[in-house]
Image (cartoon, rainbow, N blue to C red; front, side):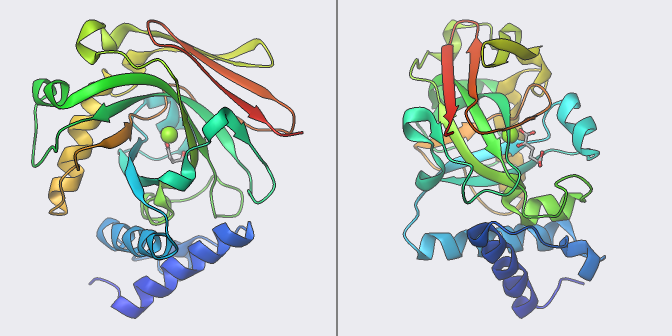
Length: 262
Ligand code: OOG
Ligand code: MG
């Protein structure tokens, strides 16, 4: 049985307040062990509606838990999505810890989707709809105490732990690269800390977009023209600390950097 509409809204408000006040709270499944994945996407949608009501604009979606490394790190086993807004883009690559709870960073690639994708689509349809691919990093934060021991509905309701993202300046035609075999190296203060091939992301990051379209279609939604899609992390996420410089190099896609304010 789905939770009553007022309760879904109350849960969305609880997570929204946690994010705005940088305060971690109890996971939703403590209160509602029966919370389903469908309920969780309804909470996510209501939480995003609060943000849109305050003037944020949706610019795309993030896929999460698309790699084995991330699924093991979080102890969760199916891909999830969240929404991205204009306010989440860390332009200029500077990130402030103030106002965050326990942020982590992870290496990704992002697709720029020129044409709407609707329903179940093929890899070729995704490639034809994309105008570019670039290196990207996602900064996660969780509105739950300890970040770690939550369930799939908990993470979905919390907009899949999204906080911010940063896109590389180099945008490449996705058909000009062997997207499944790009070397990815993420460094902290010049020291490589995470390394993977892009095949770690869904076997091929384009498949993350295929999966996103399927998840959206199951909820009667399409992927809008002009969306940015983060394909999911290739490795586990790394805790951020003040003053760090994080850099990701992706073969064929250049580098992208985030400076954490001191
Ligand atoms: C869930 C979000 C995972 C990714 O790229 O795998 C994610 C989490 O780790 O809290 O964004
Ligand atoms: Mg991610």
